[in-house]
Image: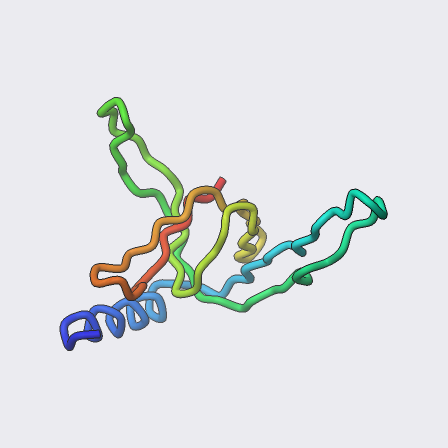
Length: 114
């Protein structure tokens, strides 16, 4: 990464440390179904990661040009659709995830949460 983007990544860490709160990112187990045996095999077990995140509204423009507010969780680790984020007493389901990576190296992840 160039110096500018190193600075941006450091700033993202600093801002999440200052304004974010502790949370748990829960990734469900990944299984595959074997049609021959009729059994499911766990490929990747369920995992929980302790993260720092900021959850709040952000204004976006939809495909039809309308201004909407969506709830976004800002993370330093990649979430996937279907993961859950638990912060305090709130649990959010992760929808679409956008990676902010100006030169191909991720700086932050913006997860739409429901």
